[in-house]
Image 1: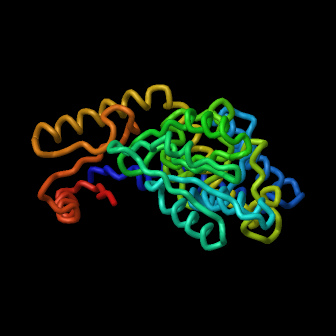
Image 2: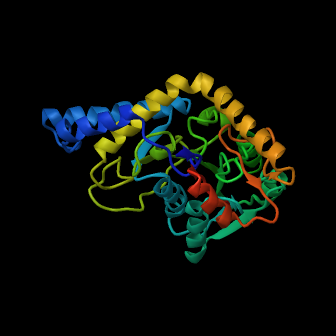
Image 3: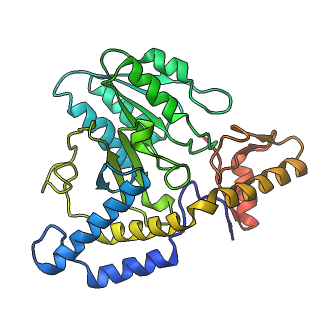
Length: 322
C-alpha cells in the first residue's frame, strides 16, 4: 500500500509502540498516587510536558487532553467560562477544522457572539478583515496554524501582533494539530496564548494531545472530577499515551532539521508529476507557502469519491477534500 493520508493520521513509530507496550506492563500506576512507582509515572508526565514546552519555545504550561479536539474545546469553552457569566466576542475563520467550528457554534448557542473570517483563493486568512473585526469585548481569536486540507500556512505572528495592537486583552489561540513539529512555533515570540496539538499527527498514538498555555491564558475547566492537570482536565492521565507521544516527539525532533527539505522535495516531485501527466489538473492552495507534506489537487470532470475508489483498488490510500 502507498499511504498518502498522513494529514488524517500517521502510523506510530515502532519505538512508540514498544515504549507504550512496556509502559502498560511496567508503569501502569496512577500518576496521582504517592507511592514510589506511581511517582515515577508522574515523572514521565513532567518530562513530556517539558519536552512539549521546549518545542514551543519554553515558558508555557502544558495540559494533557484526549487529543486536538478536546484541546480546542478547552481553549474556546474554557476561555468563555473564564468570562464568569459575561458574554464575549470570539473570532475564527470559515475554514477551521470542525473541532473549532462546532465549538464556535456552541459558543453562539451559549449567547456569545462569533465572527467568521474568510480566506483568499489560496486558503490564507484575510488578516485585514480579521483585525477589523476585533472589538473591545473580543475575548479570543482562533486561527489554525496550517489548513488541514490545502496546507496553507497562516501568518500567525502578524495576526497576533496586529490583534494585540488593537486590543491587548484579546487572547490568540492556534490549532496546531497539523503544524506541530512540521512548521516552527515559538509561542512567546509569536504572541500565541493557547496552542492545541495531537499525538497521532506526529507518529504517536491516538487518544492523546495537549493544550499549551502562556501566563496570559487562564481558561476554566470544562470537565469536572478529580481535579487532575491542575484542575483543568479531570480524569486519570493516559500514561501510556503520554509515553508514546513523548517518544514520538523525541524522534520527530531528531529529524526535524532535515524533515522539511526532504518532504518538500517529495511533495514537489509528486505535484510536478501529476500536473505533467494530467494537464487539466489544478493545484489547490499556495504553491510555496504550504505544509511540506501537503499536495491538494483537483481533476476537472472527475468525481472525487470515484477517483478515491480507483486509487484504493490500485493500492493508494488518500482522501478527498471538503
